[in-house]
Image (tube, rainbow over all chains, first blue to last red; front, side, top):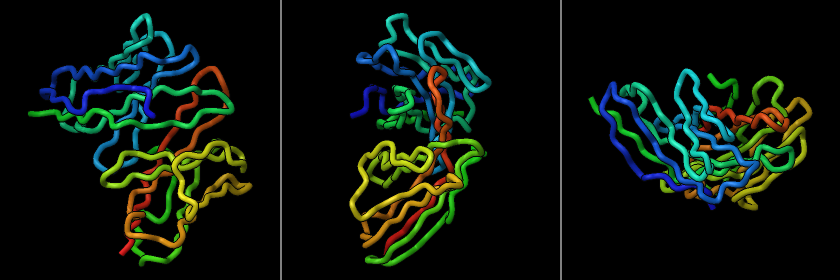
Length: 112
Length: 115
């Protein structure tokens, strides 16, 4: 019962920006948008999260639309090591309900 | 390195047997989560513990059980193993608190092969 919709796969040229979209049209006001990635059979790696405002860290930028119904994860200069499955997750981070449910994600392939 | 430690990394066992997977959360984290990832399925949430108490339950089979100990480490017990239980089992942990969002950090997983 994932609350997000992502394209199953995307390609990106090495050195270019990778823009990964996510639709979360039923998001509630107290739900955060999280992004994780999983590089072949490794543990999922936290990338970034946000509530309303756009966020940036050393790995990526997260752009959330004003109505919060969709977001885009931006990897500014994709490298071959960024090839992975990227998961967009909406999650209530409250004391009594904060488990995380993964969907199918987007398989990003960075090509030379 | 996420700070979440899982043992063993690899385990091969026979059908019908019982195994225990162990997880040490990040220092200070009170919540522990268990996930299963099979080849033909995505990451499935199994169960969450917070400070020793069960907090949330997902798609966990009755043959599986978990617990969190006073030192906050957790164990996932898998019994009467079947071939279909072969999977990667991930443990994750998070701090508690509201407002900032509790980021969950994952370990590197335990590979279970049932033969």
